[in-house]
Length: 310
Image 1: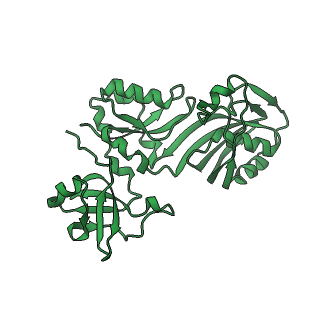
Image 2: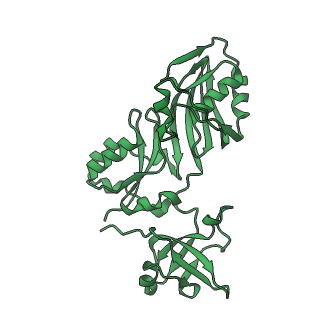
Image 3: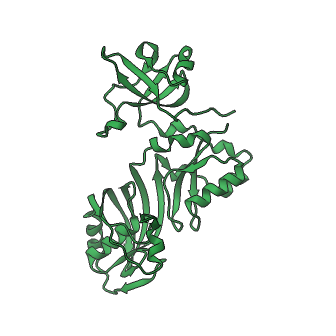
């Protein structure tokens, strides 16, 4: 059973689903899934899980995505990028100082209205399917966060910048909103995702490079490499049968527990989640609870067991 993680550099023109289909044909492995969709015309980091590592997609760190963006000023399109139909044009391009100021003003909590050309569903149909028929559906703004904007350069009507943003942020909508703020309009002309799920573009591999490698599995990483935002709990090997069968083990049966038991987030369902190891072997994700005597008890989460590669 082959299992692990690939850091794929998706090229423009392919959907994220295309990448998965290509890998299934190439590797002859059916169980493959990606962690985080990229628009067809966008490029960049696409984390792809192989085999039972697909169980770990919900546990991967989806909180922050990093993009390099090319934005064209003086244009407004129906898709909010330069592939769409031009709705408005404006030759009155503001100074780059004003553009930079507008971009920086977007940092923080950001209520973003999803674009019509998106895969969000309305009554069972994707918005982009409705948009292609000329329909406009009212969309509710969604709370997003722009963590940081880093200016690269700007000249004439073209601007380059990097942005760190929360999961599900539409960068082309960000460009559109900046254009509205400036009064000249703007559209995204290129998008490159440089970091996702703690994977960086510097270590990404394109599909052709993977296919031409002597052993493509050389690019396969252990899935727990991108799960280190969770603490680690090590269970003694002699209790392997117990933990693998979904039975609680107590802290007397742990070899080591990393950090404290106050892990997690404000979401109660995420608290006290831990990576679970049998000695040095990662076996999945578990949750620690306490009994009435304050005894720590660990149980492997259902459907999280990672089968090992042959």
